[in-house]
Image 1: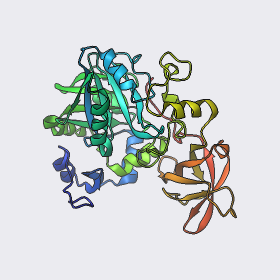
Image 2: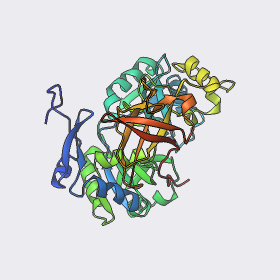
Image 3: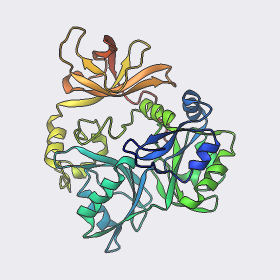
Image 4: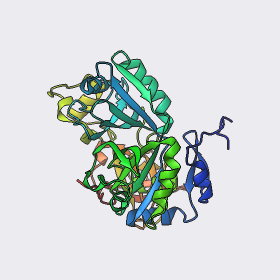
Length: 381
């Protein structure tokens, strides 16, 4: 299989397993990835909400960041120059959501950062991992070692049965709470386990040595409550959870404030905080935090049954000649049995309940601004 530019697609260590399970493989972020299996997207989605789904997310980038001083605090301070989050206060064994920002305040990528006690463990998006590594080397290599962990795969076990299933292989799993992260033995293998995910469900992400990824995946799939899940259901699950997809809902033209991600910025990095600013785009981001951003990412619920998909233009009323916004993610929400979407509109039109119209195949369909997540999350706090 070739990418659009005729460069052969990469494969994860689980490629043969996907094929043996009947996966339909598609190009995604430079990789050949499973979009669905025999069960189909709808059943995979509902199975994850009701029991547990296993996702191959080995295309994501995994990076160890080690301070040359040996102090994890120095690695945290170095990384704080690139993100608007407080990493110095991130306790050992904990993980935090963050964004790399540019000088204009736009988002270069979103990422997860975990404190492993003596170094930071960073997970970045597949399409951005080369640029993210270069970004880190350009700005923190004076004080830190940037170590891509290319010899590791990444699995996500998500759903209400995830804890009881993983407990059979990792005795510590039930004791973990949301965003706990660190080295753990899983089925006797040296893994990194975080209680987190991208579905809105309780679950775990498991970094495993690449050569042992298939062994672990097969062990988890032996449980009758576990189904393999493809990119199709991963997308519908994260949309119902109101979670951003990089390159769609957030990118270099959107700030964390416009993207409604200010919840991820701790007080210490805000105006008046102990380490306010000091990251790329701080002037813009802190100004928007103080006085508001001109536009806002919002949830949308179409009033009919027709899905409103990415790229659909949004209008203030049925007769307006100029669009006021755009849908960035949209589709059918199987849990809700109804369409859902996200997009950007001027901030004054962002309150929940605001009536708008989306243009779909030449028709203006009524939609209402709605709170996200569309489906309540079930994280173990």
